[in-house]
Length: 178
Length: 178
Image (cartoon, rainbow over all chains, first blue to last red; front, side, top):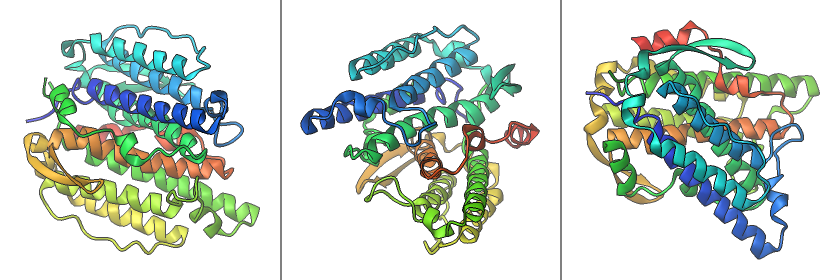
């Protein structure tokens, strides 16, 4: 009785990205209603040397894409960081999701004991698939989705924890059951 | 080839709590050096109706404790929300860790297919252990640890992503190997 590396990675990232897209929708609507230029939110940050909203979305995309590619033992597609509008950010999320949707479970399953090294903070770090997923990939992904949320919340966008967590319908249960 | 429910929960929460304790140490040191009253950081928030730092730490503790208890099919210990100093918050984290350390892997393993209902946002929501861990418990836990980080960062505390992720030494690999 257990769960598979695929179950613990791909559907989790997909769900997080879908929730992030909903947060961006709410930000866009907020900007439209208040007549705030979208770039004010897209370039917003919590501290001068912290990454702005757009970069948090790019990094959430990178975190998901690179983690799954690493576990699957394939090369992650390279995305240029050129997003400046909400439409661009949605497109980035959609392309990330497309990549994830195409990864067969068989590619990721069994990766828990695979050994590899990843540069973390400039330092080559030895992982197994299991330690990589649980101590790096998942915390790193949720960091960027949550920080995107916190940037929006700090700017008065009326998002709530329920938006971050997403809807609890049958969809996710089916996604991880497969 | 797979991972166990225990591996994907208890050591992940323990690691996140340990990293949170390091973030609090840095906040305390920052306050001391700058002669800022600790309560200024402990009561800091990103928006007036968002929870302050202390509550984020309490909620990270609750998220970890309740998730593991739910998966283990036992009652989570109830902690009163009375923390007002950094020492109090460290104590809260330590008590949470103590509870987690005492949970045998056998209690959590096999919970992936267990069915139960949890109130999420006032709504009774049906989960399996697997969907609960991956769509609610882990995202919820990382939300509160990251928001604690974001509150500190927003207030100029010189924490970095490496502090949030924690050290990549043998410790975690051993924790999940068992």
